[in-house]
Length: 424
Image (cartoon, rainbow, N blue to C red):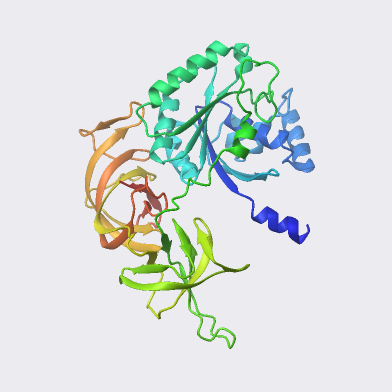
């Protein structure tokens, strides 16, 4: 690969998307079709796929086997764990998270969707909108996924009926009207036969919209990140101690929000001291400005004591600072959430401990209603809680910034991640 081609590939825009839907809606088959029709499968992978399908006695190549990697998944024909796949087209790079459809694997969907730009929600054209569809729409809204693409799959099973598609679209829009979802698109597809996935379908001439691949390649995601509020959690202090960089002191990390420019005035938290950006360095060289989600090293004009867990922000544009925090939490562990329980907490690059002060209410995801009577939070439950941390955190609401507005809770005794939190 030439240097120019390699540089161009590295600089291509990355889109992360997740799939969600009920069991047997065809999520894995859809991803397999995307990879197959976009020529993102190596010849040896295709040969193994054809052999595996033949051994299973299937008439067609089973594209779902590309993502169903666990033996139990292949035996049952379902998705259990989150499967990640990577591919690229001339326009974009993609990371796919194929998440399970079962109710008991809600936590897996939250894990796969937490960083997604787009959620593909599949609906079986024969079944229409079901309880799991509502559940996944609510989680997509809760996780603040900017774009939702509703793929009405298995259109071949309903004779490619426009009426069936329109009825599903109207029902889905009426249900999600009360959710905070700004961008919803609808596409009628057949993942099995490839209709409207990569190539346009000749059997649905009534549909005038784009194919799924065209939409994934062209949907606008540049403004998905918060480019207004400057947030730079410091991850690592770089001190080379070499003759060439004897006095170099850089603060490395990934920009969580905003645009940082050379010469710009900044504030360092928690000290509150002010300075100016001296340089913004990367492996490829120095930049005049950088933005989320780039990984950079920032140097300051003043010699300020900055450590891991501190945050560099725009002057006069600071995040909230506090120890009493209210959040929505998805519980990931078999052991239930304990009121007055103590947990280890990770937020951006900062570590702390916290105590659960109160369970405000639990969410019934099926009806999208809040319940105050039953406050027992078990695995796969979502609840609103209040915590108090051992030290102040620098945070924004999750709706404002998905990085500075999220945290994870860890069991101190087992070191297991037990909760994924979204700050209100």
